[in-house]
Image (cartoon, rainbow, N blue to C red; front, top):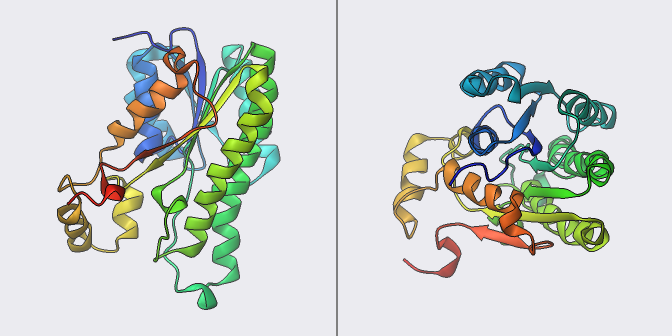
Length: 254
């Protein structure tokens, strides 16, 4: 199937690597015009280069999602370049391993919350008016299985991702009637640079894969396909939902 996002304009934050990068490229394959947004200019421009066959349909937009003026600039630059905004994928996030709650450093808490939750709030805040002006749209927020279940190696990360889910359901209640569908995806373990970094060693990463019901980590493409569905008109009656995409890890099937 092709052209599932034909003539649609999307912003993908966190587009310099991992799920964000693969999603941006997947959207281009399906006919979208894509603004690859990230704080990492080098990685973001690499993504644009990887989508070079799509020419003027892809561009890099620098953004620090924790700063509202930067996020507003991201949305304004995208609309100025492509004329409208139809989809937003909030994939930008950081994961810092922390000790148990009583030993968590306030700086780590603030850094994670500023990017993962407040940053996502800013992206929605400035994208929604542009989508309303374009006649509606779709927002896909990347949460995590850590937002649904306790994640022992980082309390702030788990809390931030739980916040993403609640923000999603509340925002959907407020804006679905205006033609904006807002959903979340809670990925399980996915083979990305962030996950490999958070497991601290190749041995631990491979061990987690062996313990998974599918005997492997998920692929970024498997999340991107779910994002694509939610951003497309195929999901026209889906809003306010959270999709757990974890390969059965939460089902107890081993």
